[in-house]
Structure formats: structure tokens, C-alpha cells
Image 1 (cartoon, rainbow over the protein chains, first blue to last red):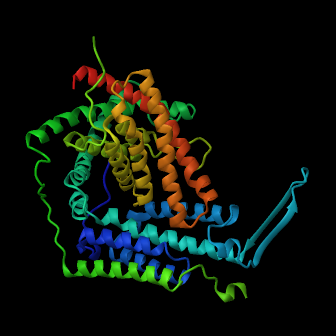
Image 2: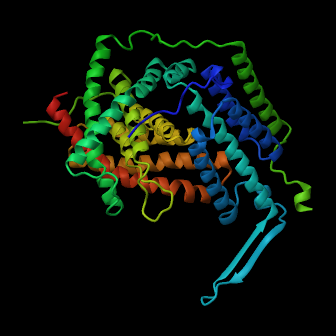
Image 3: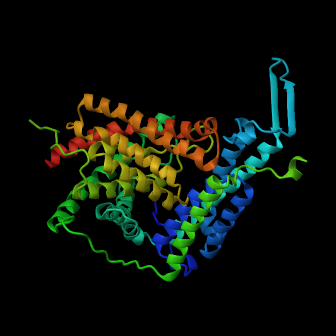
Length: 290
Length: 187
């Protein structure tokens, strides 16, 4: 198995921004989006997320797997929630006026079981709002793994306030990936030479899970044993006794401060609009129910 | 007489040892998650079996709640990065909480091959998976606007059931193997 991260330098506008500013922006936008159910506000955030995506120079080929996954999850949740269960937690949908679009009131033949289902315009519109909301939030974070250098995860989270040890642990995890991937492939080959077949899905659920043990146990135990040598090496170099220095350095530029300021402004404005002026709640256009 | 007991460490210790094991656990979880994405539950559509969930549970039990949290949180991030699925922060946190809760019994387990300790770990696995996956599922209510019934049906039940089965089968195997490694290496 080839374990490779999806990052590569693209020379995009998004990559020039400090990773700390990008994380602050993404988190501020997520917290702002969840305040609103009015589609007019949701479309604003969707447009911002699309703009970020457009500026990241991602190709369809690179991101298509993520797109399929996002659309599948969003569709499943919206369809189940809108058509099968009680269509969300918004009182305007569950208790407010209802304009039926589809009414099913029948009985199953032979067993005479009654089936009653009403789909309203309000539930459909709510489903659309959900879709846009889920897509906006997913889109915000979709670009990060493709446009953020894995070598900078540690220094980024250190800059966001994580401790040296936590940040170094993140850094070390990415550095371990090639080594563990090599050990994984060697173990798979060694077990295959002994008649082990990973891909054959014979047997039931429990048999499939048990079949993972000859792969997981040696890989895990070898990794733990190798870790002991690294621990000794780090202790000999007095790891953790003083504040750590990092090979990469991050420094804010004027556009990073601008992005952080804009993020905070949007978050504050969202709070004020939602809880100060009671704006942004679920809204159904008149032409839909007229 | 060989013993499989190891020295006691404070539960919330985060020294050099924990830093390295957290990194190893996260990398392992990410790698094994991505490697086993092809395993599907028979006749259950798109719900994948994830044997790698045993890693954050085991690392939490063996090395403490902080290691368990980082293994689950960062490991899920790495797994999604390798698979190309993007970031799902609330599910990363859910996996982290799963490893953290499992690690709450780390200080009380000294012999990983002892039956009572394995039984204790099994009970903790059920609790850890329930709390972790419930957290992630309930967060979906807030993020996606779905109701409780939908998130239980679509998010919680599939993840809880698959993780429970994987954890209950694989974690005891890892514990027994770790006990053997500890007794042979003498560390």
C-alpha cells in the first residue's frame, strides 16, 4: 500500500496565507454558519467557502473522492431526516404552517397496514437549507489537507497555543508515516508468504475482523518496540526540559491579520444578528408556499 | 518467575514516553484505517468495518488517556487525509474522546495478560466507544440540523456497533501480545 498525503505545492493564493490564520478563519466560519437557518445567510457562507475552494487551485481529479464522500453523507442525512424521520429540530418546520406537496394515505394490500405520509414544502425547503449548510462546512475544511504542508502541522498548532509536547507529538506522527508504512508492507508480504490473504473476504463479520490480527499485532508491537529507542534518544537529548525551537518559522503578514480580523468580525456580526436582532432563523420564501 | 507487570505511572503523565507513543499510535491508526477501507459489513451498504479502531482503544489502555486522545484525534485526521475524505473535526474529537475514556483505566492495569484486567478493558471499551461516538453523533445535530432519531440511525448505530465489535475482539489480542513483549524486553 502506498501511503501518501495529498498535499503538493500549488502556488495558490490560499497557500500563501499563514496556516494559523487559515485555521482561525475556518473555525470562525463554522461557528458562524451554525447560527443560521435562513438560506440567504447560508448562501453567503457557501459563497465564501466556494471562493476559498476556487483560490486553492484544486483539481477535480484530486478532490473528487472527498466530493463523493461529502455528497453521499449529506444526501443520506438529508433524505433520512427529511423523508423518514421528523425533519429536524426547527420548530417552524415541525410545528409551523404546513403546505403539503405530497400526501400518501393508503393501505398495504393483503395485510391492510395503513401508511400515511405527508411531505410539506417547508420540509423540502429545510432539506435544501441543510444541504447548503453541510456543504459549506465541509467545503471549508476540504481544502486544508490538500493545501497545508504536513511538515507545518506541529508548528501551526504550537502557534495556536498547543504545548510543545502536544505539537511535537503531531509533528512526529507525520514523520512516522513512511517508516510505519514500510513496516506494514513488509509485514503484509511476510504474512502472505505464510499463506495469509488480506483481501479475501471469506467468512462472516467476526472472521474478517479476526483475520486482521496477524497484520495488526506484529505491526503494532514492532512500532512500540522501535518507539523505546526513540524515547531513549530523546531523553538523552533532554527533550522537554526547555522550550523547543522549530525548523520552520511562521510569521504573520498584513493579509493574515486582515483575514483574522475579517473572521472575527463575521463571527461577532453573526452573534449580534442572531441573538441581538433575532435575524437568521428558518425562512420560507412566499413564492414557495403561495 | 516471569512477570508481565510494569511500573506504575501517573494517569495524566505526558512525558517523553507518552509523546512518542501518542505519535506512533496516531500514525498507526491513520495508516491502518486507510489500509482497511475496503472491508465492508456484508449486506450493509456503505458501512465499513474499521479494525484499526482497536489502536486508540489499546493505546489508551496501555499508555494513558492523553495518549489515547491524541491517537484517536490525530489518527482519525491522518486516516482521513490518506483516504482523501477531508476534515471532519467533530468525528476527530469523537475518536479522541473514545481513546481518552478507554485510557481512564490505564493506571489500574499492570498485568495485561490477566483475565480480570482484560475483562475490565472490555467493559471500558464499550463505555469509551459509546461516549465517543455519541459525542460525534450529537454534534452532527448541531452542525447538520438533523434530529436525534436521524443521527442515532445514520451516525451513532453504525459506528458504535462496528467499533464495539472490532474493539472487543482485537484489543484483548493486542493486550496479550503487549504483555508478552513487555515481559521479554524487560522494560
